[in-house]
Length: 64
Image (spheres, helix red, strand yellow):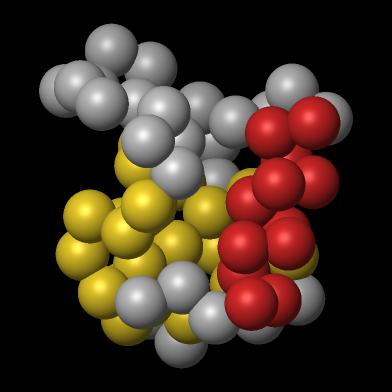
């Protein structure tokens, strides 16, 4: 999956990556959070509320 940019945040998810299905979120080149899309929790880092809203939107759009 390509990088998806929303504002200053970049969302990266790879097809065929290890389980659970997850997304990496970067801001200014730094990892903000690695988010578990199946368990809906942070695997690494912390997700600001705005990032959670964007993840939810991308999932509903079928982009993640």
